[in-house]
Image (cartoon, rainbow, N blue to C red; front, side, top):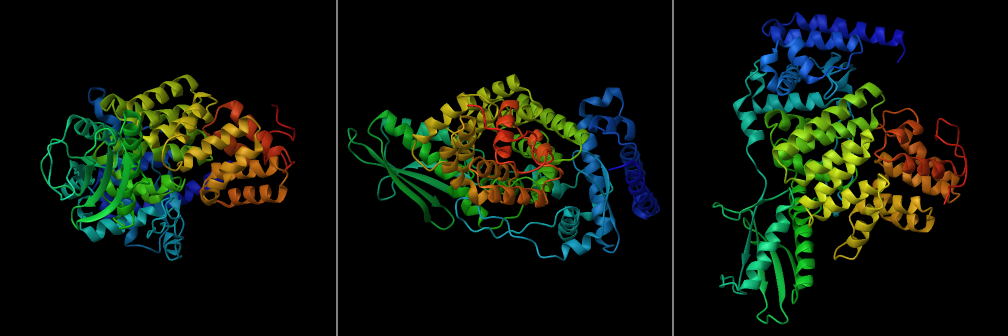
Amino acid sequence: MDASSHKSEMNEIEREINALLKDDVFQRSPVMARLLKYLFEMTEKKVHVKSFTIATDALGKTGEESSDADTYARVAVARLRRVLATYYAARPERDAIHVDSGTYRVQLLKHPIDELSEPSEDRDAPATGNPDPRGKIARGVWTWAIALVMLVSGVATSYFYFGSDDDETENWTTSDFPRLTINIENLDGSSPQPDESQRLYRSFLTSALSDYTGIRLLVNEGGPADFSLRLLFSDEESNRAVQARLVEEATGEVVWLQSFSASNSQEAKRSIKFISTAIASPGGVITSLNRGRDLGASSPYGCWLRFTEGLQTFNTIGDDDLVRCASDWYEQSPGDSIASFLYGWTLLDRAVVTAFPGDRDELLSSALSIANRAVALHPQDASLYFLQLRAHVLLGNRILANQSAESALAAAPDNRVIVGIVATFLIMSDNPEGEKILRVLDDEEGVALPWEHAGHFVAAMMRDDVAEAGQHMVHLEQFAQRQPLLLLLRAALASRSGEVEIARSALKQLRDNPRMAKDDIGGLVGSLPMAPKVKTRLNEWLAFSTLGTSSDVTSKSKAPSK
């Protein structure tokens, strides 16, 4: 944006803020008024502020109180957003002031009520094939959704105070994740006296399931379970088989059943990894079943379901519902490992597509800070190491990225989701260990997860293996429409194969994608979480059929080097 346009935009925002500050809501809350004026001044000066700076410069935190300054500022800004959302919900004809999450940039949303009236576009169904009943809130107006939800739930009266609303706090600090027990049973449903091998099997299965985030295992806890995993073993130890049944306790319905051979340790281990992935992964039975029930994104588990839905379809970038719930949850529970992961993830998503280098640096820095703090609090949580890994790759810290990858794999060796995603990021970091890990996963039971195909594609691209890359693109086509990286890979493969029109079409879809803020393909390639060598090869494939000018790709047409 040139200086004249910036000045014009700031004049519009200033006029609206001046009108806002005369309203009773800001007259009664000088802290909120001071915070809004400060954030506008920083936006006008194009200064990228951090939460610590907000706490000290705008909210009066002193050096002695700096230990919780970041959290204090985030809570204050979240309160300001709610004040604004409530104010404009009663004035739908007005252009709305909005404070951007992560960058704290003050924006003016033009006539958001018109956008809300447009039909929302359904999100892709998860890769599991389960129906997806939710639609996407119109881009740029999620503040209205927040306001309406809060007004309906009757909590809007507490927005003007720093103290957290009791109901809202409880909503985000009480775990509502489904509870799971593991039982060994006879065919008639009675509980036998398990032998040593059966006890070991249950113990190893418990350990494997504990690597997954989306369930609460009731091992030594009382209370009712939502699901029970019932293990029925054959009597012959020399030719032992196990049948695993997942039962929903509320209905007594068997929602998943499968039998396995477990006559030796290798077979037992393979079956344990398969069961844990099938039941507890983002595409597993429990998560998929609950996603189909439209639980919303206003609780910890609802927010987690929203993330898994996007993860299954390569579609977390630009999901306003996910951004909102992750921010709300982290605000109320900054020490929670899952809340930290989700909030950090949404910041990294935005860093990939933002058009402003200063914003990108701020978002990456904030996400890495959140990841590092969370790892210190929860050193056994593999997802946090993966969050670190993604941040380090985007920042170009290859050595630190490899260290985070090793920590993630060590923390959750039986979690196929973590292992597969980490392996894919290693491949994108030009680390040959990534493809070796994916080859091991290929030999295990079960269908390869979507991101594993993305990893295999990039590995094939680095070898200039067009045929293998094409085999994996077949599995990625259904997700490519909304994922910038996959559209780039589709265009690159088409260009390398000489299918120029298909390549041009993919690049056009990418430019037309409302979630992509960058104005050129080369800029997007430059921001991807890839090592320079991998980006170079991607650019070579994109330019192979001379797709366009240097604004389309960042290297001239030439055959890739072997």
